Image 1 (cartoon, rainbow, N blue to C red):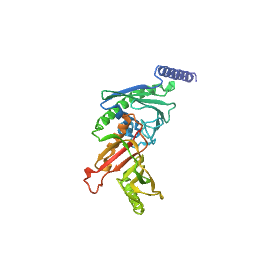
Image 2: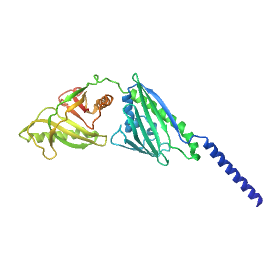
Image 3: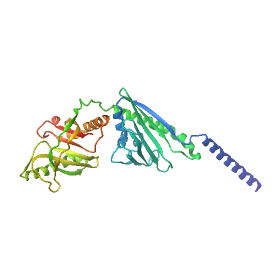
Image 4: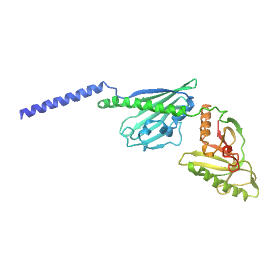
Length: 339
């Protein structure tokens, strides 16, 4: 019995000593991760900034999305403002579940996000700093982690090199993505500022998915033409247009419209109103309607880089008939209102 008690005594001493050593070592380690990585990208700050604030677009360059292609994500309806967020859920141990939310933002200069991770107490912060010089933008990405209890400080020593590696790989992918996009001037993209006069229009507001826009517009224009055809005091004039009030792959809120002359009154879901007027930026796209995304992006970048406020809608005018002209000559005028 005495021998057993001595053994237990020494075992207890050893355990206490090991715990003490463990705590002493942890006390010498940092109680949170603070680090940064940077890269130079050969593009204007506005282009890099627009890629970063688009949280949904992170799947194109952030390594965590590539670690788990099955990761489930939800996003705020708008980006580039305080309160914009992304939530994610993943079974991958290096991704997990979490949320990031924009808490500070300065156009073309800074985006700071608050991050929370399921299973971890406290909040972490990450920030992107953009500094452009002679067309080259330095992007500095910082991380300021939540403080850990003393007995968990050892985990910070393991996490920091992993974060450095993930930051470096993500920034390299961001650089490749941005630099792969053509940097065309506003004049080369047929972009100009102008004053737009309002027109008398009849319109129908509806919604659809992004891949069914053409079909939906066809249905709405048919309904509008029937309305005008049965209204003796009004007739169609000018080119049809479509206003886009909200856009995502899953849902597009649009308003098909046809200019008219004469007299008409709102009937059912057919509205009689004026088309948008005032100062706008216009871009002219030639070719298939579905390939106009680059022009939309160029117009958004122009508006943001020119220090205008991007409004919550845009519109397109369909200048000629795609059934009677060559597909490469199909002409679409795209307008973004500015103020």
